[in-house]
Each structure stands twice: as structure tokens, then as C-alpha cells.
Image 1 (tube, helix red, strand yellow):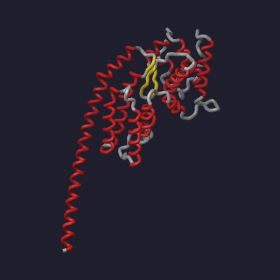
Image 2: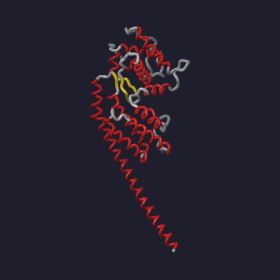
Image 3: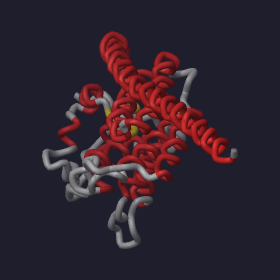
Image 4: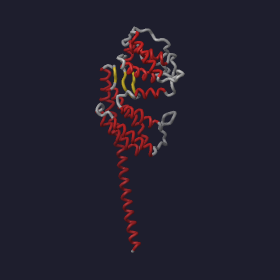
Length: 308
């Protein structure tokens, strides 16, 4: 049963325009992001296709259960097992009025052409451009700074193929300065008012990361990934459209009762461990300072005796 013919038509027309042969270059990511951009563009023309989505780890993401209820097919019907989109050589007939169809068709054509070369092929690296365009519509600047700038900077240190952190990694001074800059910029734009629940924990994370890069710098990679996941699990509760209240309440309860408390405990354990290392370092520095002071006194006494 089709409960949302506007959404169904928009999806199928988009796939027909972007990838009628069902080739692998247009898969789940491209589908998720393009249908989101189409939804936003059509809203400006007073056409609401009521896309069920939420903001998550890599931008907008379709909520699959509501999607299936709305269009009568699971998302897997349109994104096949090889991760390409479904072959859509023709668009199924619809009862949608012709004038609305024409507006949808025009916006789909403009959207798809934006990522194509003059020869009709998609430009190399179009997915990255597509993600940038989606993030341009993100509700918070923090998302753009943290996930589109800071995390890619850290990822640039991973191995090219397996995306592992090299065992021999050591940040240069200019790298550490860049990390500090990203941390400062992220802090400036953190959505404190909307994310008040996790703000204090974010400050603890920020402080702990700054200690980490002094004593255990490779730990910054899992720490950053884990915080981004926590932020996004809270984000999806607050920033979504066309989802059932029951689903949002389940997400919220799961976050409040399980996900967030566990994260706070794990962060506090890590923080205590790193602070012990930091205090040991401070003690060692104090001992060294005392030794240097003692040596200076001995040296002065020696010079004084030599002059008599």
C-alpha cells in the first residue's frame, strides 16, 4: 500500500534520471543525500514529499521503517544487494497531477545535472560534493566543523587502504597546532542551548582530548569517533522530520538510560587514567626543577670559592 505517492514518485523519478541502468556508481549514499536535497528544494515550492529522515553520522539518513510504510517498498527494493540503485528505465504511472509532476521533474533534472560533466557522466568525486551540499543544510555549524573538517583531518593520518592508525604515528608540532585549532573552533560553535544535556560532558571530552595528545596521542582517534557517535545519537532525537513520536521517544529513552550513562562512565575512567599520567609528569618536572636549582647553587658556590 502506498501512503505517500508524492515520495514514491519522487524516488522513482530521481532514480530514472540519475541512474536508469542501475549501475554501481550511484548507491545508497548518493540516494540518501539526493532525495534529501530534493525534499528541501521542493519545500521551497510548497511541495512537501514528507521524506522521513534524521540527522546522523554522515548527514541526512532515511528512516527505513517509516519509509517502507510510506512508499510500500523497503529501502532495499531501491538499493540492491550490490549497493547500486534499482534499474529504473521507466517511471511507474501515478495519480499525481501533471503540474506537480512537472515541478518535481524539473527540480530532479537540475539537481542531478549539478553533479554531471558536459558528457553526461557524473564528475569524479561527486559524492564528496554531495555530502558538502547536504552539510550546508545541517542544523548546526558544529556538524560542519567537527565532521567535515576535524575528522577528515585526523583521517588523513590513517593508512590509505585499511584506514588504520600507523603504529609509528607521531604528530608534528604543526599537526598538534592544527588539532588545537580544530578543538577551539568546535568549542566556539557547539550548540550549547539545544545540546544542554551533553554540554558538560562535551567540555570534559574536550579537556581530556587536550591531555591525551600530550601523553597518548593515538587515543585521539577512538575518542573523537566515540564522541561523534554520542553527539549524533542525541542529534537524531532533536533534528528529524516526518518520524513517529513513538520512535523518537524510544531513541530518547535508550539514549538517556543506556547510551549516554555508559559513555560518561567510560570517559571518566579514561580521564582519571590520563590525569594520573599528567600528575606524574608534573611531579617529574618539579623534581627536575629542584635538581636544576640545586646544581645552580653548587655551581655558584664553586665559582665563589674559585674567586677567593
